Image 1 (tube, rainbow, N blue to C red):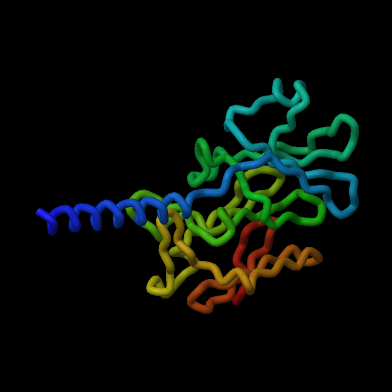
Image 2 (image 1 turned 60 degrees about the horizontal axis):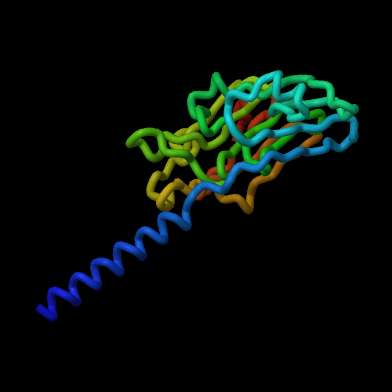
Length: 200
């Protein structure tokens, strides 16, 4: 009887430790944010919440995700349309604050959750690694599998696939070239306006 009680206690403790680790590895909350571009004449706004934000909300003082002239009230240049990106669907019609944004705000890249690839069914490496947008429209996406050639280098947490060596990420705003490196040591350079891979 005493052995069963100790075993039960150990199993319960193990369950709670595993559950605590899974909770600690959850997605960061979505917060609306605004980035003032270098020239101060434009602002990029990312709205948190429902994907069904519409023009009515904009007229009620809340901005949709997109690029605006920095005027009073802000004048829309484009809205971000996540609908053509198969990895962006409710409630993930959002890009976190560490997006890579061109100086004029017309182009940006999104590396979801900074260092992760989202799970795609049972294919853990088939998740979104980096997506590119031009004038608010999705132009190209690369999966973790597209970029990480040695799959044994991928690191897994409860909800993430770690694949990028973030210390090597660089964006040259003058040439609009984004450089990222994978955990298996491959360095990629992308042209931000098109998402095209430049020669390695």
